[in-house]
Image 1 (cartoon, rainbow, N blue to C red):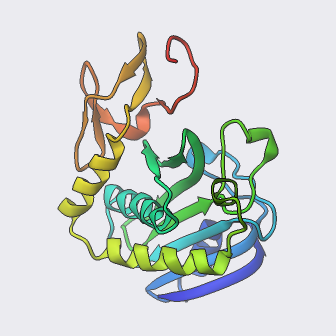
Image 2 (cartoon, rainbow, N blue to C red):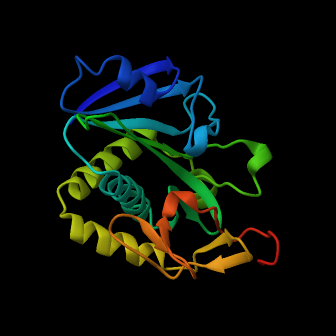
Image 3 (cartoon, rainbow, N blue to C red):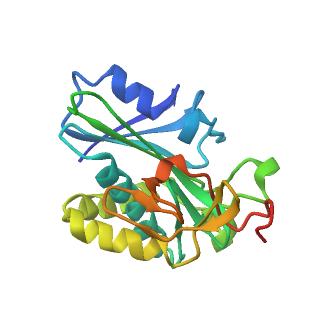
Length: 227
């Protein structure tokens, strides 16, 4: 896999779009700092310079949104496992450790599906202190600084392994991790538990099947009647 690293850009996903015509088929773009990093629902992703992993895997072939999300989340889970850390998937696109967020995923595709961007942000050595009650980092969990280049190489290896897995095998692993802990969301009548999930990332609620991204999932947060 080809690697491109830059000191400062708006975001790795945005930069990938700018150079899409010249970029190699499978490329990882990383940066020391993003001026306009973002996550799900365009939420701002904050990260100090040279502290965390900020990258985008560019795949210039067809990947469905469910495939891309499963590859990205499981790759982060697998690399955390190499540090003896137990990561948990919070639907639809976050990774938690011990009830606190450590990573986020942003998948973007074009039409007619000629490329897929798998944006990944992982808190390695720092995170916004104002989010300390909700976020964590590898440094905080392991009590030592993390080498970003070493983490990047580990992530590339786990990504390439998962990229070549069948959709069925990906889903089996993804579903198993999702239901390691209770998945709850804000329903019309308060907090409800997820009943099931399918390979297209549709979630079964008490009343129907709906796309998982349309549900507001919670993870060990005190909200309404959930404790």
